[in-house]
Length: 67
Image (cartoon, rainbow, N blue to C red; front, side, top):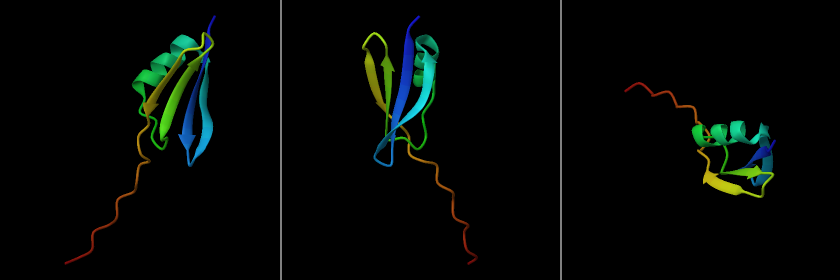
């Protein structure tokens, strides 16, 4: 059985997102957008590496003032 790890960059540091079965991690890697991470890497035990951009952190909207 192959294993895989999802690693992302957050605030300039590499952070482990998830580890597990390679098929499950590949499905998670393809479907999620990973908010708050700059880059996300998929690493499996066969030596394969994939990289994609994460999405920016969600920001709270500001309340509009009265006119």
